[in-house]
Length: 378
Image 1 (cartoon, rainbow, N blue to C red):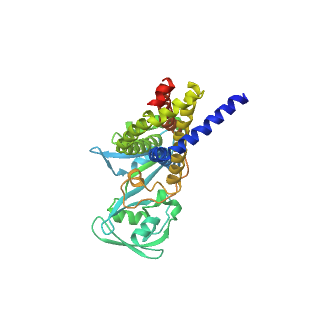
Image 2 (cartoon, rainbow, N blue to C red):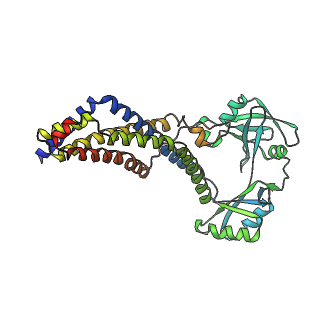
Image 3 (cartoon, rainbow, N blue to C red):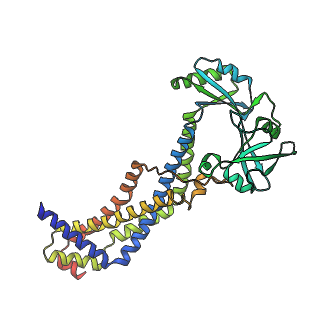
């Protein structure tokens, strides 16, 4: 056992010295290898972290949201629907919600206007997100002018600004009173944007949703699980689009790595011939090339993974955050909580480390089976 360990230790020492002798070739390969793993790992880390954040945000979402459809589009729902839905068996609470979007033509940004279930501000006052405050250049006590749907100015006083730590959910948020919201959009008092429904038994959600559609055919119930699947699909799609864009670079790397791994130079073939002539066995040569491939591929994997981790969780994936977060003007600035999927890491490992390692062994085996004299003369 000790003899075998010493044998592998000596082979590893020789492999490291061999790599250092061809440091320019190996460094260029390591740099490209690391860059590709860095980009792919960054995408995986960022998408997984965004999915986790979305799941945490939706954890407090209602069990079901009921919308009214008109001509296949989302329309205002009568508040009277809430009383009838509340009377259904299994329904705990039904809360009419008021929310909408406002485009500011001066700053070119969209704001999310909402009214909380419990009044948070008095008429004439608002609470704004940190990004809205920066965009509007306002502080607590300043006045903000909005333009209603009738093009009438509506002056509101900023009573509070949400901290930057809440940017994920409040970056573009403007919280106002029901009276101001109705004045903004000329909203009838007996209408709501949608209804938030809470069901006592989660296993009855599908049954309650079916009953709501039966009583109100013009409605569309949306379950919390469907919201989560939608967010997952959106992030997967955006991550997939980035991978498609980078496919050319990945293919170029594959060709580059295969050429470097399989194309033994004359110097390397002579080296194998010399090793065979001084007593090295074919297995020793294969071990040598195996450890060379492991050193290059594993170093690139670890270095690329660490760089990707820092890029995503310390610098908020600044290289491609706009492509994955969306295309809004007010980007929420927040630190992602580290969320690494071991399954994705394992897949990335097997797709990057193992192929290159195998690709280094095959040409070495072909060269090791050649007569040492012929190899040294080549």
